[in-house]
Image 1 (cartoon, helix red, strand yellow):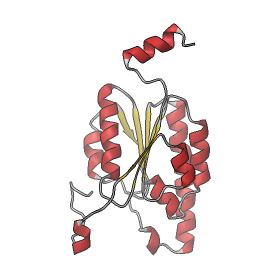
Image 2: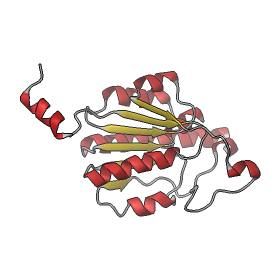
Image 3: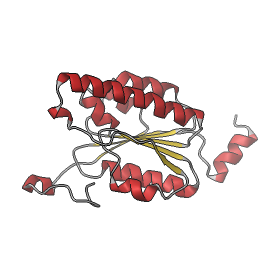
Image 4: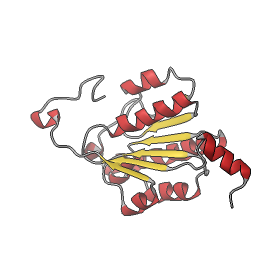
Amino acid sequence: MENREENKERESGKRTDGLVHIYCGDGKGKTTCGMGLCTRAAGYGYRVLIYQFMKDNSTSERKVLLLSPNVTFVPGQDKIKVSFLMTPEEKAEQKRYYEEQFQKVTEKAVQEEYDVLFLDELVYTIGSKLFDEQLLLDFLDHKPEKLEVILTGQGPSEALIERADYVSELKKIKHPFDKGLAARDGIER
């Protein structure tokens, strides 16, 4: 039986549990979906923490979201090398770096009681063998009850899909990259 406080919270529209979102697939817009959800949450008054794997600190969405007092970006590296161009030694070093960053970011989210944690491109990072998926699975199994978690990237595992509450796949039908057009500032990056 629900107590009065739980019922009151539910009726007021305030969330009672933090859920896990995955935006995946080969289509454009995974990060955009995650950033949109962060914008909505920040506009509502939730505190949002964002870390972008596989990206440098110059993505366009950072510039506008940093204007919100409710959004915090944890800085990453200033230069990112594409994973398939890395030597085995570089991959091992990058994996150590990402796993250390994950520990720092998740500790910050928990200790400072953030409402939303967005780990952009972490799913892709796992698929590139630059992050041990078990670290993420363990975190999701023990995360604070009210922490909403957003994940993006291609190819989530069945174990990750099982732990998610939302899984949305963006499918590419057609993309300018197929014609050799480079990513455009303000649109793709």
